[in-house]
Amino acid sequence: MIGSRLYIKIYLTVIGTLALVVAMLTLLAMMGRLDTKGPFEERLDRFATVMLGENDNPTDRQRMLDRLSRALDADIAIFSADGRFLQGAGNKIPSPDDDDGLMGMHRRFRAFNATLADGTRLVAYVRRAFEPPRHNIIISLLIVAATVGIAAFPVVWNLTRRLDKIRISMQAWGDGALSTRAPVRGRDEIATVAREFNQAADRVEALVISQKALLANASHELRSPLARLRMATEMFELSQNEVTKKEIIRNLAELDELVEEILLKSRLGSDQPLPMDQTVDLLALAAEEAAVTGAEAEGASTLVQGNEKLLRRAIRNLLQNAARHARPPVTISIVQHGEVASITVRDHGDGLKQDEMTRVFEPFFRPEGRSESGGGWGLGLALVAEIARLHGGRAYAVKPEGTGASFVIEIKASGGLV
Image (cartoon, rainbow, N blue to C red; front, side, top):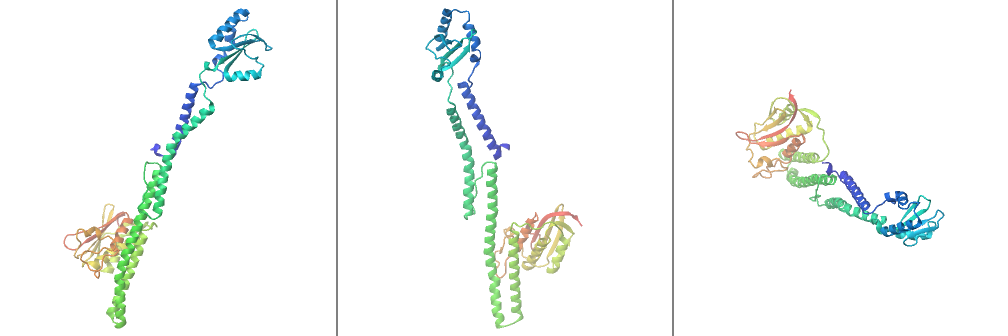
C-alpha cells in the first residue's frame, strides 16, 4: 500500500538516484585513488632514511639511487638544504626551488619529496603509470549526470504520460463526448484522480440522459391534456355547460400535477441534499392520505428518520395510483419487521403482468394495451422509487393472492413500535 503512494514513488526515485550516484563514485574511487597523499607518501621520509643512510658513502648511495630509479622507473635526485644538486639517477630533475621546471614535471610525473636524516632533500618523479588511472572529475560528473538523467526519464515520462491521457480524456469529455472516460492504471494519486473523474463523469452522463429522457417524455405527456384542454375550451365557447367546465378543470389539474411531478423529479435528481433528519410516524401519514382517497389504513405506529414531505408524497402517489388505475377496496398497511418498516398499498384491479412489475416504476410507463386516453403512470411511481432510494430503501411491486396488485416501500425504521 505504501508503494502505491505517489510521493513515496518520487521519494524512492530520489533515494535510488542517490544510491546510484554513490555506487558510481565508489566505483570511480576503486578505479583511481581520489586522495592526494597515500600511505607511501606519509612514510617516505622513514623509507628514504632507511634506504639511504647518512653514513653511506657517495658511491654506495649512488648505487642505491640507480637501483631505485630502475625499479620504480623514476627520476631521482638529492639536493642540499640550499637547493644545490648533489647526486641523482635517471633524467635530471630541476631544483625544488625552480617553479617553472617543476610545473612541467608535475604534469608528466607523480612527485615524491622527503627529507633525509642529514638534512638533504630527496626528490623523485615517478611516471604516472606507477599509480592506478585517475579519471577527470568533470568527465566523471558528466557521466553521473547522464546516468541519472537516463534513469529518471522513464519514471518521469510514465507519470506525465498518464497525466496527459487524463487531460486528453477530460478535454474530450468537456467538448461534449460524455461517454469518454480516463484510463485507470495503478493505485496511486494519479489513478485516484482518473477514477474520481470517471465516477463524476458517470453521474453527470446519467443525469444528462435522465434529464433528456424526462424532457422528451414530459413533452409527449403534456400534449394529451393540452389537446384535450384546447378542445374543451373551444367546446365551452360554443356551449357553456357544466360537463365541459369540469373537463377543463380536470385537464388543468392534470397539467398542474404533471408539472409538479416534473419539478420534484428534477429536484430529487439533483446533487442538492435534502433534509433527512425528521422523525415521521408512517401510520399517521398513511391515515391522513387514506382519508382523502377513501382507502383504509391499518397497522401500528412506526417511526422512521427522513423527510416528511417526501414520505407523504410517496404514500399519496401510491394511493392515487390505486384509485386511478385499479378498483376498490384499497388498503394501506404499515408493518415493521425488525429494523425494516414497510408501507404496502393493496388494490383489487386487473393487476400487472410479470414483465410490468419492474417497468411500472419507470417514468411515464404505459402498460401494453392501455390507450393514451386511459393514461399512464406518469412520474408517480418513479417518484416513489426515488423517494425510497433517498431514504436508503427500495420500492417494488408484487402479485398478491387473488386479484389486484401490491406496491411496497421498505425503509429502515428509527425505533420500535409506538
